[in-house]
Length: 330
Length: 272
Image (cartoon, rainbow over all chains, first blue to last red; front, side, top):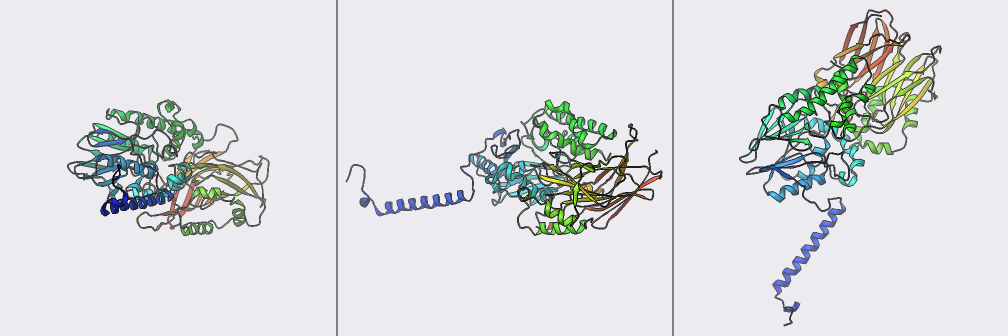
């Protein structure tokens, strides 16, 4: 026998067989992996960085930025809640890549099945990751208006982001509508862990849904709350002001906004949004009363708010346009 | 000369419905300029003369909101020019239904400017073609960068316009301080103005188009303007117009949508 161990012919047949089987499996797996890569499947998926804001409640805070290739569309806050039996995902991110990274973050911490994928509303930064959670038995759930909104908006989102995110990130994105919807409120149980899903009248969008984790008193407000990031009105200014009054009454210990850091001063943290909306309403009502045309009015509306918000110039004109068209009817 | 807008719209919608992939608006922008073919099919062999000194079109270079893009056209004819605006056709070249609207004007109405709001699907030229009382066509154009990202040329509130379907307002603006400046009013109507180019996520059927196709406003018995509209007009169509008061005591409006709903309104005319 040689000093380094038995030679090939000296090894027991079973060991040889096992070794060749291992080689074969490795070869097949590599072939599959490289084939999958050539199809545009993601490169290595590193788990999304998440913080445990309360026991069993995890949140990834998105970049305060516009969706682009570099940030993989990861500009919204996404998260998950772990119960005794299952996990609920709350929004899936701005690309399937981000969705996969979120799934990896979940699997680092629990192997429990994902029972629900909850979309707080239809915007791409919150739903483009949905495909990462398809075919695993999770129920996609959202506001009763979410399916219609995905129908009317989805094709534009898929087209608009081809250039912004690039073909590689967009290749796997699919519009996945909820199979269960919420009208009013609905409780789901993750196993000793009750979540209340609440559908709201038109505010940020016409399909806003919040999620309250009763155990920790954590409210996922979706885009009903923006912190630091200028609020984006894609629904109704007046509707949102009314919703803020009711949202303030939700007994939350901490609130995860759709964009920006979680807050614990509740409901005081709504004050900035309220101030911005009241500013828009006042400026635009004045312009409308004076017969000023929309194009002129939106250029100067609420310039005083610019210093309080990030991405102000990206969205204020759009907010003012939507609000002007709405307020004209008064 | 004025096209059958409905025919063009039906053809356009059918073509879109037949497309197998979700319509990629950006790909359309990358394709060849559609204007020569559009001009031919809309205006046939009529010459399109340079519209400078006749008509101007104003739109933001970069749209803030793809669903609500302001558009104004105004006559730039000199005050002593005997010719009048008879009709204006608005074409948003890259939209699935490019002919956004055809406006015709009452001969005594004095309409010199119209402002409305349109949907813009992708980066596009917008053409305004005016027909004057001399029977000739005059053309101007502008370029609009569509708002992209999460701004979609779709309704913000799927149920709201439906709930108040056909509600109308006529805003009458106070006589302007500047002598000789025209009087203005604005007709607004609640309607989702759906394009019908969406596939329902659950049924995979195409959601039918539902939009205002005919709108007329009168001062007393005199027509102020008529609009043949399509799916490129924004939800809750809004038309702000200049006019010459004719002493009539009321304004009337009548709108019809493609499902043959008819909506009417009447308002006392604001004093001279």
